[in-house]
Image (cartoon, rainbow, N blue to C red; front, side, top):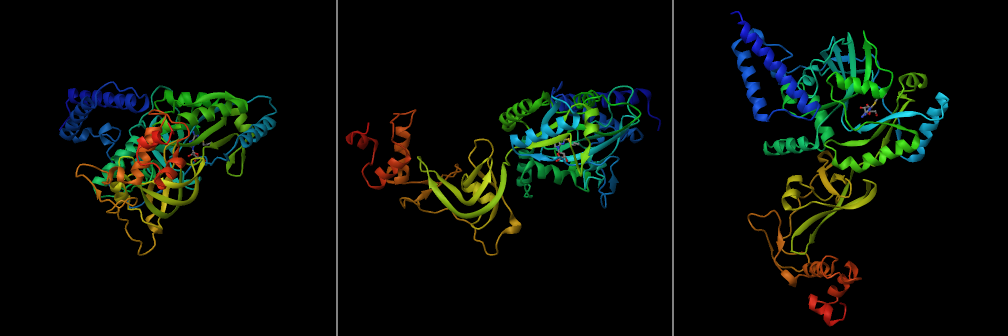
Length: 482
Ligand code: IVH
């Protein structure tokens, strides 16, 4: 059956419309229509394509849903190797990097492009005459896995580049990752389907991209950020790294807005601290920042040592996650009697401090994560947030490790523990009979926002309560402490 001209035109209009909305939503972060309106247009196009199967086009937005599973991944050789970056962990190491760069270029002051180091997976995308034709993982840096069908499902990645005078070939380098909020809802979905949860957004992104069935990838909320050009034919790249990224953005590729041109060690360190402050508020995870000499001619002049460029370095933040062993699980009693299970840990350096305890939140969380004494666990400390146990490394669990049970009587006063049917927390029913609750009540009473009693801190309250000197706040007056 021939496709009527009007239908053809309508399909084309809908495709352009939908791709424009994808671009507005994923690249510019400025949606023009509601999700419902997008769905309506999408279904309209799907209907046309199902009425006229000869209209189906691999570049249609409806095709970002994945195809038949592959038996295995093909290997792809990168035109130019995908190298790694050397790391710096201190200002001294950044200073040494800048010194080597200045000496190598024989310049006093060097301009750098600074941007976040995304915690995802490196990917290389090939566009021919502006059409996406293949994409591969980094692999060993020389050969990676062909994940083209999976990448087609990543909606922030254009299947066609924008603009005229497109290069005959363009290899774009960048990172595939998952936003934190998308990771949270994916894990919620995994949980309610009784499937395995992912430990962090990076693992979720990696696991989602390396699926032989691209329909699974399509159901996973992956994102992409471009940060470099690997190879180019039939066009010239601009002469600085910042201009390259601006150009990639003009082609419709998502480029991270958090990029700055800076000078000298001072400029690098200022960027490092600025991003460090903003880190917890970014929609995605970063594990550092990357500094790249901005001039491409200077980059070439500096070249490479072994497998890393001399012109770029990753300045890392302290890791927010680490693994360690659970030595014990204890239950703390709060001011309102709420029981909080806490894991006592073998000391571990994470988020810039040594951590020995991590909260397990409440009984439901503890059960869901199924943390047991002796387990190896992933601990997370982000910003100033209380350290928490993220997940158990199940492979390392000792045989016969017993499931942890919440106590049925208060570990402090022995009163019965009760849990109301509509509450997540179990509570000690002892009230002010319970020394733990009494201590917390006194601390609360003495705190700055209440009576603001100077010098009445945790240590003193412990002593006063343990030695039965103080039972209620009234005793503080009797003793002349207020
Ligand atoms: S540029 C020649 N920029 O870091 C320079 N890499 O340790 C090429 N990465 O495998 C890399 N964010 O996956 C660059 N903004 C960024 C990056 C970045 C993350 C990753 C990349 C690479 C690894 C190197």
